[in-house]
Image (tube, rainbow, N blue to C red; front, side):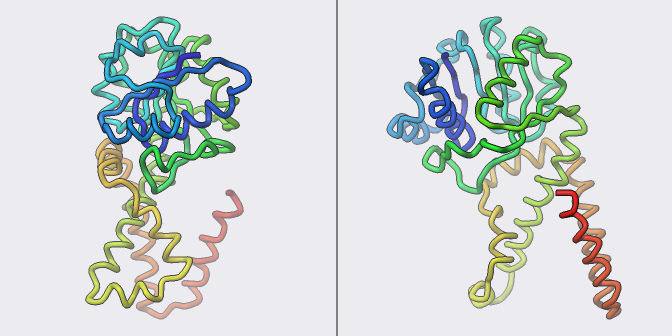
Length: 279
């Protein structure tokens, strides 16, 4: 099986390692990597994450599987270059927003393109952060599958199942709204928490008291600003809606504290506890 991975950051490199681990005794697997970052290419080769590197799109157009793991804007810019791909090639992407990507897929390759979003990741980046267990047990969302051929959809599904992933299906528009609340807004909040501390007159003294709660809530503020600016841009309207909902709750708490309505504060917290009855 010939696999091309475009984008050798955390997600793409981890996927390569997971494929190598899963199929090492079953398939003759060749993984070709592409990345505009030369250092990523070098690290991926040196650590046996990929078998070879190319910067020529023509070298991968006959692959059995093309995995696109780059920022959303870059995915959209790449799509026209894939029009000459073999009809036997299945294409998946790992973009964090789906609607604009799907709207940009050329009709010539639409049935081959299985729009995917693996719900996993880390705040660390690059091939050296790769983890072959990153995808195991995690959810992957497949969007607008009615536009895929049965052959390509089943191929993608089988890959995800073989890696131990749980598959759910969703309309791209709904996916982007839901992702804003459970992923994009929390990242924005984490960045805000970090900046609110750094803006104080002596942040080092404050951070000396930092315990597990602060570390947990600020951890994802280490995520790539370039990547998350791109995600916020692509999902602007949904992000604003989610931030409005968050600000409403913060303002509500602020008002209750100002008025010293402690019983209502406790009830507000009890309402929040109900979330973990669902999770």
